[in-house]
Each structure stands twice: as structure tokens, then as C-alpha cells.
Image (cartoon, rainbow, N blue to C red; front, side, top):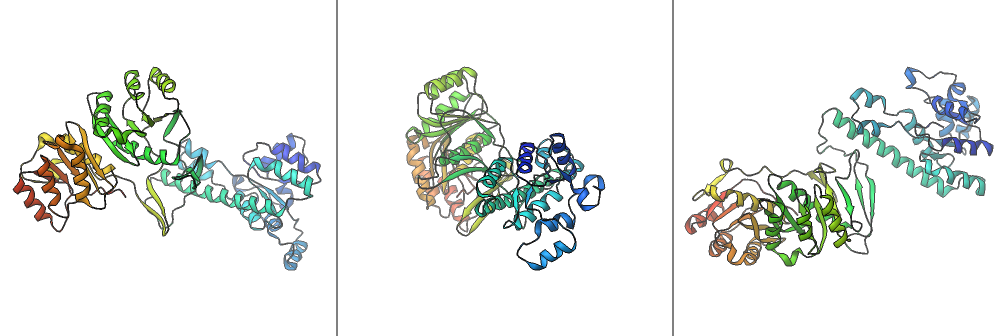
Length: 501
């Protein structure tokens, strides 16, 4: 027995002792058991070596490790055990130094290094490797299970040994992943895209089901991270809710410079706007596509007032996300929309990389948007329209959040048409312009990627679009530029694509 977390260890040790087991323990755990009146022998008494190097070396000795790893059906192993007087160890109870706790507390590098467990990991891995003969227990919640099986079966059954061994290997794998993450932060190293990505994911939510009812689903968090939001009210979150909320959170981050609102449906924006206050921003975002907004998610980047909450309660939204809610607004929404999930977002996120599972493997990429376009950092084709720059930037933000191919049309601080998810870019343009209708006249248009042909610019001109922002980069860029000049449509080439698949 060698445990840092001593929850339940006294009762478990008493239970084993009462059932005839002899207990061997490291010094800290031994003192705990002796104080509880449990007969225990210290490791140092077995090995003949005191704990050395300030306690860094306690259990790493052949008399201990040999007793765990010895295979009971191998004559050579048994001969060694007898020759060197090594007692066979049949249960290993161990949990590890609290590295994660120290990392979360912001401990310095020296403290972190001192909380990297060495001997405990070796005990656990040795026992799990030899699970046919050795029971490994790393979780206090399993103490009762072990005692119950000893009582009912005279020993711990093989299926339980197997489950405990797998749990042990998962435990040490997670421990190493946490150490990697903690030391990266302490050393100022960006994890980036390493050759191997140590990543142990902790389940934080069992979800009702996945995208469809036949798919099981859960939400996991990587080491040393926390949920960036808190559910204040409403039904439990679903898989699709969390996917849609991701787009809403990104939109709120992009709109942080002024009161803004984004409405999301099926992981893409169906309305996005800025205003003098949140209520105005919400009204303009909703006006873009009120039909698609039904059952969507609304993201707001300022505190929700009671007045706005009253307006929100008039429509059906799955989720409302904001940095905070006034107490009265929270009570109002809970009362009028009890099923609406209300999320308070702290402005952060859980992980820096974007991971996507595919049949060919796990795709990983840096999860960073391109730099915000600046008038002096790109190329104007035709007359520069700095007067339309705020709308151009808002259109760029909406397009970079939509699934590709994505087009956004903006006028007076709000989207008036969005087309996204089309295999053909010109179809996305056509859809966005049709949604905008007469509002397209004098509006601006953004594209998440270059125009492969001049047809999109021609459609925009016919609809009355005044200015376009797009990254450029097509082999037909000159043809597209010529069309913009010929048609009198100002066009800004930012140089940065913003695909979202």
C-alpha cells in the first residue's frame, strides 16, 4: 500500500487485515495505518534500505518489484523468489503524487518536478502487467468491490482483475499526459503539433446521444483544462448543442470590440450583427433569417439585461450564451423559457488544437483564426471604400464562421444574407444575394475563399453590391479583378483564406 490520496484507505486496510492479509506499506501510508491501529510492515523493513534522497527512493527495490512481477507459473521466477527471499505480493494499492493539483495551483517548476511520482507509477504498471496474479487498485471507489469479491469468491475474479488493470494503465497514461501539459506550460513551451501528442481526455458529460439517436456521445476535456462555460438553467446539453455553441462562442469572440450578437443554426451563423447595445444587435441579427433562427443558438457578447431577456423569451432558442445575465433577466428566462439552456461563458476555451476524428485517423490543426484584415495590409481593386470598412469586416467575420463555401452580405452593421455549405461558390453567392433581396443594394459581400471565376462578381454587381472582401489567390485573379473594375465594384483582397469544413 502506497497512496497519496488516503480516502478510505484505513477501512480498506482493516478489511484486508481482518481477512488474513499481511500489509506492506511505504512510510507515509504506514504511519496513517499505524495510527488507525492496523498491523503494517514498512517497505524499509523488507528491503533493508531506508528511504533515501529525501524520500525519492522508497519502493524501487527487487524485494518489492520482484514480488509483484513474479509469474507464479514460471519455475524460473519462483526459483529466483525463493533464492533471494522475495515475498510474493498479491495486491498493489497505489495512487500518485498530486501533480495536477499543484499545476492547477500555479506551482513553480521545482515544485512540479518534486510532484512527479516515479515509484508509484512503477508499482502500478508492474501490478497491471502481471494482473493474472496481482490485483492493482488505483481508485478508492474500488476498495469495496475488492473486499466483496474476496468474501464471495475467496479472491478477486479474473474479469475484475482485467478491468482494474486497464483502469490502472489509463490512470498512468493520463498522469503522464498531465505532466506533459503542465511542464509545457511551466517551461513556456507551446505544445504545437508534436510527433506524438500525449493527450488523456477526461469525460465531463455523458450526453443523451450523438448527432443521431443511434450514436452514443460524451464530452471530454484534455489535461489541466476546464469547461469554459457554466450552465445556469435549462435542459442538459446535447452533442449538437455543444457543436452549435462552438460557433456561437467563436462569433462572440470575434465581435468583442462592440456589442454584438450571433445566431447559429447547424454549426453556421444565420444572423450576425453589431449595434449600439445588445438589443439592437440582436434585432439586426434576427432580421437576417428569422425562420432559420427558430430553435437555434443565440450568442451575446455583453451582459444580458432584463429588457433583452424579455425580448429573447418571445422566441424559441435552444441556448442563450453570454458573459453574464442580470439576476432579474435570469429569473425571467428561467420562468418563461425553462427548457432554454443559459450558458455563462468566461471568455476562454478548453484546448488550443482542433481535433477531428476521421476514418483515416485523427486530424489536428492549430485552432487560430487568420489576422483581421487591415486596409493597408491588402490590395484594393477599384476605389477604396474605407467608409464601408466596418461592414466589410463584419461580413468577413460572418463568412469565416460559416461552413465553406461561405458568403456573407452585410449592410448597416448586420448580415442581410448568408450562404454557406455549398459545393459551388457561385451558388453560395446566389443564395446569399437572394436572401438579401433589395437590401443587397449598397451592401458589402465577403467570401471565405477566392472567386475561381468572375461570375460571382457579376452576380454581386447585378444585385447592387458596393464592395467585396475576399482573400484572392485564384489563377484567374486578374480576370476577377478586371470584372470588378469593369462593373464598378470595389474589391479588397485580404490574402487570407478562412475555410471551415
